[in-house]
Image 1 (spheres, rainbow, N blue to C red):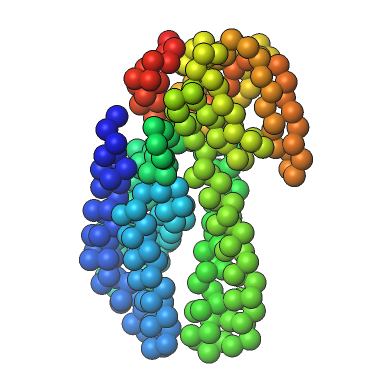
Image 2: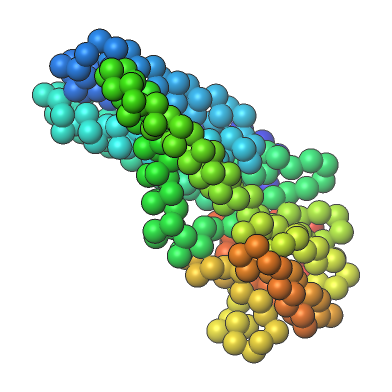
Length: 296
């Protein structure tokens, strides 16, 4: 794969994000028209700051900026949906919702994830992102995001409305919530495979205490996992039930993996294979083949 990938892959998202204020602007302005001037100014400033922050982040593909894009892009959907319901500019509102949803889908797409995580590579590395575990995607992540979004905007809007006590409390409570959620969401951006000259590194700070290097001379197979792979006891499942094709990375010798259980580390010994779910399994296998690894 060309090294231009980090610059090219996020292009659909950038285009949608640039168009978004043009289409959503009339409905948002109309929805804010009956609010006080101070609320209008603060709400508009928050919206533009978030929009600008995401745009800048999309121009610098890195792991950190992936977290910025994925944390703020869903907010555009919520804002546009509110504007469509609260304004008389229904057509503009619906157009804004459609573009915001398309931008969010692009932000969470596997090509975008690969571009951003590979943007943090150095030297002769190639990184490919792993899919989010299904159990986290269904409830914990959306709930945490909603809490952080509320913590980000509630305090400033209450203060703008003259609710000094409630606004102050919301700021004091909301700021640590935003920081805590952002740090946790960033762990999801840091789940990847790293192809290095020595072999393949599995990096998953949510499931593993430390990354694991599967050395080139010990690798026996990289390919789609069969049903028996997870049931024979030798393969360690790190997919978290994520949707998509599961790949098996099998070695000639067993090794030990330190797994996270809360704040404790539990060692899993006698592991002969790891099961992972990359966002783009075909691309992952292509990279492995290019690096002369045993793909089958």
